[in-house]
Every structure is written in structure tokens, then in C-alpha cells.
Image (tube, rainbow, N blue to C red; front, side, top):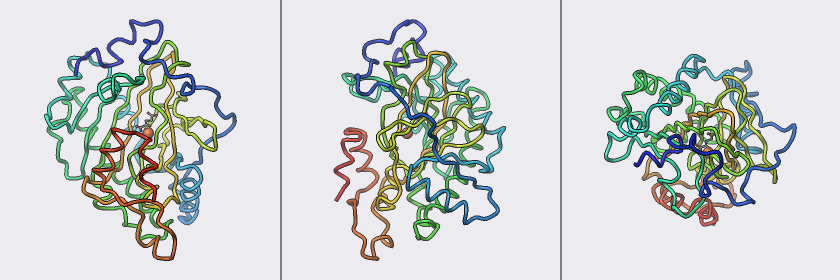
Length: 334
Ligand SMILES: O=C(O)CCC(=O)C(=O)O
Ligand SMILES: [Fe+2]
């Protein structure tokens, strides 16, 4: 990658947004719903059936919630956000060197200019992405700078795996499936994304991420406390996800929408920018291995309920999703 492709390399030279980053009028950030919020799920309740009720309602109605009392140490959450801030603050040459050790791309630094067609509108964001399978494969390709990067990465992804499996078990139980239904191949290929959204001179014209659904079963997002930037699209309006300190934002991805035969919503969301300060987030994507077949869970169908989605391998899904984006979603329907 060329260092000019990173937004963080040049944003400070501009007092207006370059034309290729100006969104079409209909996609620009506009009015948001007032007084609305996404549900909170308390994982530490004495009565587990109450937690189950909360998580089921949230997944069916919103596809988005914030989890509290999740058991991940606060210090690790702070340290992880800070190490990604430090990474993105390093000189571009160093960031590129530290993230290009694997010729097969298990670790990758990119901006939308690198992954998207050059003709479409670009997004105000840089991302460092790693694969982080439970086998520990690929660790030798992780950045060695900042100095604590590898150590924190290993600790944080272990915590995310534990939390992710706990959430998946609750969701499967709530669907009436074996709680372990999504453990194994359906969740064995997670990735970690450290997003960085530099301050933007004209936030009303740009986006940090377009309206999208995630190509995951579930996504667990760590975001900063005081910045309102993530928005979800529900019933025709945008709802701001106001950060709750030390909560994680969890959303259902398109894969779990399919597995649940549409009972859970893979909610659409986007990220807006702000002119004041940079925002850093860390997203843990729970993803299947490439050869896994994604289809509605058989026990959900046997009771006479109609299949809503076709069967597709994750590899084929990803290939189409990368090239066609959300235009591919109707093709998944039966
Ligand atoms: O950074 C955020 O707030 C959200 C990122 C996101 O939507 C994603 O990684 O899919
Ligand atoms: Fe997302």
C-alpha cells in the first residue's frame, strides 16, 4: 500500500473534504431520531432467564444492544483502545512495515481507497485488520510496534472469544437450538479490526463507514466513551448508539440472520465523522471458516416453518459480498 492512501496521512492538509470523499446527498448524515436508544443486556443478572429474555428481545427487534457486566477487565479495554490509537498515530512507513509481514494478508492495513473501486465515493477511515483464529496461527505476523501490541492482542482476542461464545450460546438457546450450535466451524475464523476515523473538516458531507450489515454471526465493538458516531437504521430512522462507559456494543450480523431463518435482525448501521477529535474503535468479528455452509438451522425448519434463505458456503458469500456489497442480499433469499 502507498502511504497516501491512508486518510491519516493527509487529512490535516485539508480544510475541506476532497471531492472523492463527498457522499451523494441521500447518503449524507442527516437528522437522527431524538430520545431513542438501543437496548442494554445485563450479563450479570442473578436470574439468567432475565438475561436470556433481554438478549432475545434485543436481537429480534433491533439486532443491536450494549452489554454490561460482561466480565472483561476495564483495564484491558482501556489498554486495547490505547494501543490501537498508538498504532494509528505512528508514521505511515512504520504502520505499513508493521502490518505487511504476511504475504498472504492475515494482517492488513487499508483504507477504502485500497479496497474499493476508485470511482465510488470513499470513506473517512483507516483500518488495521487481523485474522485471529483460536489456533493462534498468524501471531508471528502481528505488528511488533507499539511494543505491547502482541501481548495485548492475545489477551484481548482471548477475552473476546470467551464473551463471543457466551453470547452465541445465549442466542442459540433462545432460538431453541443446542446452545453449542454455533461453536466450532461457524465461529472459528474470527477477525479483529482496529478502525481509526481522523477528525474531518466537513462531517456533514462524509461518512466513516457506509450503511451496511456485517458479514459476521455477531460483532462485538469497543468504542470510545464520549463520541457519538455509530448509528443504526431502524424503522426508517437513524438511532445513535450513545456509548455507555465500559459496555460493548454487540450486533447481529447477516450470517446469524440466515442461521436464525430471519428471527434475528442483521441490523444496518453506519459511522459518521466529527471535526473535533479522532475516533478509534475495535471490532471483533465472529466469522465462520470458509468452507462452512451458511443456511437456516435445520431444527428451526423441521417444525414446518418455511426456509427463507438459500444455502451458501461462507467463501462464496464473502466473494459476492465483497464485490456486490448489500446488492447481494436479495440473492440470498429463497
Ligand atoms: O467503528 C464503528 O463504530 C463501527 C464499525 C463497523 O461497523 C464495522 O467494523 O463493521
Ligand atoms: Fe459494521
